[in-house]
Amino acid sequence: MQVGRYQVIDVIGAGANSKVVRAHDPMIGRIVAIKLFSPALAQGAGRDRFLQEARVVGQLSHPCVVTLHDMGIDEPTQTPYLVMEFMEGQPLDKILAKGSIPLPRACAWTGEIASALHVAHRRGVIHGDIKPANILILDDGRVKLTDFGMARLASHDKKDTPLLGTPAYWCPEQILGRPQDARSDIFSLGVVLYEMATGKRPFDSDSLQGICTRVLSSKPLPVSQVNPSVPTAFDAIVAKTLEKDPAHRHQSADLLATELYPLARRKIAPPVPQHTSFRERATRLLRSA
Image 1 (cartoon, rainbow, N blue to C red):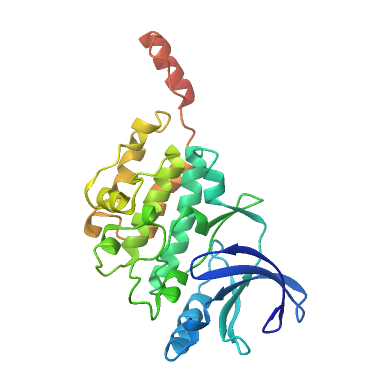
Image 2 (image 1 turned 60 degrees about the vertical axis):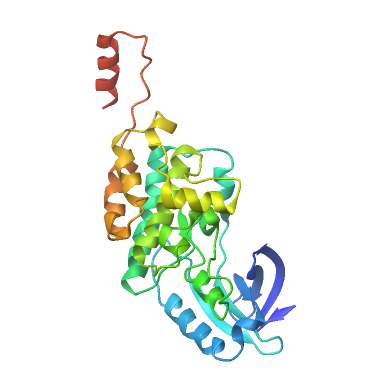
């Protein structure tokens, strides 16, 4: 199979609206990842919108954003496609399947993603589908945000599917059908951060209705109550990202990153057994400071 000038090697992932293949670029001699969309996306005015939005995404430049090399519409099949850098690593959702992540690492990764979002938001680009599956942890420990703007691209000409993405990471305004902005991405990133620190989703439920109800009306337990090794100061940061009203969240992703980076470098004191004396507890805490 061939897409444009690219020779497809194999399929590495598939979703409801697209699939990702690994391919070879014979002109440059490198391996790339290609995201293939439904041909319906290229029909009528959708063709121009796809190309325009892909150009905007392609102009983003940040070390934590997957680089977009090329884009086009395969003429024989009328399949729109995006050509991206291919990297070895694991999506965050597979890592989270093994449990929570140490807080300094979770804060470092989230801070990097927030920094990347800030750059995109300043250019008017909203990700719209922040979730662990769209965060790639490379083999060398670096973090990359994938599928920038892809949820919005996939939503064109689909008025019957106003809600896209994974329900557990939806923000309240998305569920209510209200306009989304940079603070919507911050809410979804807060859900991911909560899950990294605790190993649990803050608004999980067995049904779509249950998830939506929790997102709209419930307040999750503070992170430190779910994971006692986390300092209580961290609770306020996460709680602010998960505010129902966007006006009460961090007003930019950069502000969130600024709060997280100190914790990414901080050595967290281990819990002190409560059966020890006050003098012993104080000594341990002073040594770990």
